[in-house]
Image (cartoon, rainbow, N blue to C red):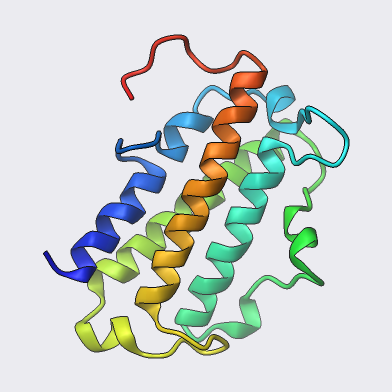
Length: 163
């Protein structure tokens, strides 16, 4: 099995294909606005903040890979990547949809990439597409675990799941 196939499988596992952990699209399916903004303690991140954080890094990487650095999101530091838009139900829905869109677009980029594309250095990064997507998939999996835990803390996690 080649590296591209492995990365495509990992990438899909983070969004919509069951694997060792639940895919984010399924996890967020029934999360309400109230559950999305809830925090167990002060200083913790909400589900929505975690999705914003994931979206920031995926969108930034996609813009860099496409050479559209003028359109990439900006942040003063990592903490600011968790910042929410105005807290409305519509904005919560838009954040989820944008995340799903960007994640799928990155999957399409990976699927279309030739061997030389996978290993070329990304503008603004000191590593290649293949290394960045590997890191982003691990990053997603880590935060998906946090999102699952937050949903369980709120009783939003179904008692019996297929995964």
